[in-house]
Every structure is written in C-alpha cells, then in structure tokens.
Image 1 (cartoon, rainbow, N blue to C red):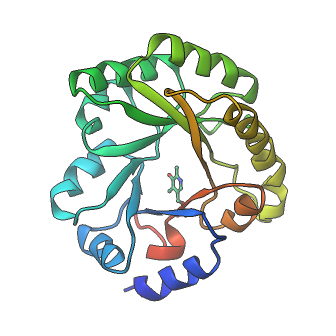
Image 2 (image 1 turned 135 degrees about the vertical axis):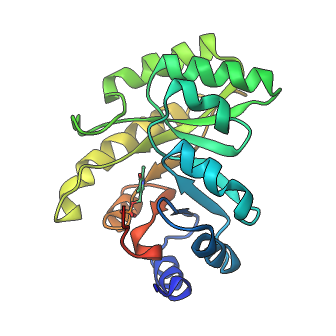
Length: 220
Ligand SMILES: *Cc1c(COP(=O)(O)O)cnc(C)c1O
C-alpha cells in the first residue's frame, strides 16, 4: 500500500504559500481517504456523483468538492454534500444547480470550467465564452455565487508545455477578480494536478487537485 502520509508530506513541501490542496480521492477507498484526513487533509475531490454517494457516510468529516463533469440530472444528489462545484460548463447546469440550491435554502459556490486549450477531449467552455457565462449566471441564477475558474490542462509529457493554457486562465481570473459583489466573488483558481501542479502554481493557481501523487496510481 502507498505511504499516504509520506506522499502528503512530499506534496505539501512543494506547495507555495496560500495554495489550497484538494486531495483527489476517486477510485480510492474510504479507508485510504480517512488516512489522508488523519494526516491533515481538509478537502477532497471526486469526479463522479456515484462515488460521492457511495463513500459519503464512511468518510470522516471533510469538505467535499465536485471536480468532474456533472450531469444535470444528478445535481440533486450532491447539492447538500459538496462545498464547491469546480466544473460548471453550461448555463443549463448552472440553472439546475440554482434550482436545487433554492430548494435547500443555500447559496452554492461554483467555479466555471474553462478549456483554454480547446481540447476536444475535455469539458469546459472556451475562454471567449467566460464573460457571457458569468453574466448569464448572475442574471438567471440568484442562488449561485461564482468563486472563480477551473482548468484542466491537456496531458503533456513536459508540464512546461501547458503553461500558456494556465496563464490564459489566470489572466481571465485577474480580470473578473476586479469586479466584486455578493454573487461574483472570485477567490479560487483551481488548476494543477499531480504532474503539472508546480507549473500551475507558478502561473498563479491557488488551488491544486492532486490524486496520484498522494494515493498512488488508480486501478479502474
Ligand atoms: C483525477 C483528477 C485530478 C487528479 O489527477 P492526478 O493526476 O491523479 O493528480 C484532478 N482534477 C480532476 C478534474 C480529476 O478528474
């Protein structure tokens, strides 16, 4: 079994000050997740609704993040379980989140997923749609608070190659950070995974989503 404690120490040693670590726990058991929590992990990320539901009751108290593509018809299952949805990529999804948040009498924090590389294999809107998406959500989704942007870079052997994609999202993040009200309140720029979180941090990320470097490789 992976030495989760040692791996966490290694990852933490590489984090820049003020960067928040989301431990990505997909495919891993509640037992492994609880080891991470016992070693100081406060935030975990899952990319599938079903995995959140399966593990929710067996995992110690922690903040859950939805980081993967979210189908509209599944929002209702997680609306009261997650603290932040990183992967909002359509107005349709935002409207459903809004509706379910209203039913639960909460304001849901979300990030908008930007696919700055225009990678066909990834979800997310293109950078020129970000402003429009933000305006539409502000107009039509009163129970949502937009907290920032999220980006998944395409895989590259050399993480140096994806810096421009991170930099582009950081530039947008800074632009929208200048406007601030109670529903548009940028605080999180979620970029960087196990193989590219150093580059992402250097390009301005303040939230990294790290799985493999903590829990070892995944067996599906
Ligand atoms: C799996 C996943 C990660 C973590 O990937 P690793 O390479 O294991 O660190 C980060 N973000 C998202 C959206 C993921 O699905």
